[in-house]
Image (cartoon, rainbow, N blue to C red; front, top):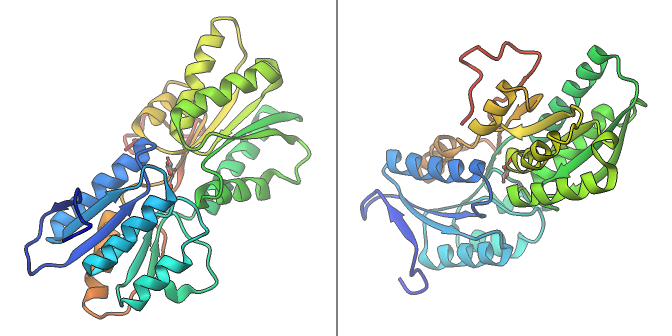
Length: 309
Ligand code: GYE
């Protein structure tokens, strides 16, 4: 087992399937819940899970995938931090005849024989939901000029690109809306705070009407900054966020956030079902998107279905 020191193995026995899982990091509650979902689903299926956490470094993910190939795991699962730069290592996996399942974020490649399946959210649809909420809100308020700041996730990642594209496709041609700035918050709460501080310095609370943030961690960071500001008498901004972690849903119920677009981290069971089918030699679907929706201040927020993860 050279080169496999420090890997975490759970469940299964020597006769069972071993899944090599490269997680991209631990940047948010979403990610942590996703890791737990993978661990629990592997355990429930009786599979060994060899997991490596890359701490937001693509090179570490590539190293992990190479070590899974060397170890000859049965299936490789990974959540790519960014979209590009995977072709070589995936060609090595293919060469070694090890099926690859991409989970959560997607890759950008010309050769879709490099992976067997993709399981993850339709991030474009999430961006569309965020935009549709904003249109409805503007209609309700009768607003004719709304200045938007966008706090983006990790540059080059699928959720960042598609949440932006979906949103812009809905609001971009509507003259009531101007995106005055898009900043990179890297999906981190600390960066969300930093971005909000800088945006406030530049525009003041009076210069910003809408915050569209690509994940809850950054939104909660921004809220921390705004809450301090509020004591100095700031106005109400329309805040739209994505994920649906408990703290964000609670903030929605408390009236601090206006819309939470859902993105489920609970992908483990779907992934393990594909692992079962692919190791049994069955055909598997190439793309699987979980069902998702959104909660907002247009909904009855006392409904028990309005719940975070
Ligand atoms: O929205 C964010 C996390 O890739 C969908 O990554 C995931 C995103 C999620 O850091 O909170």
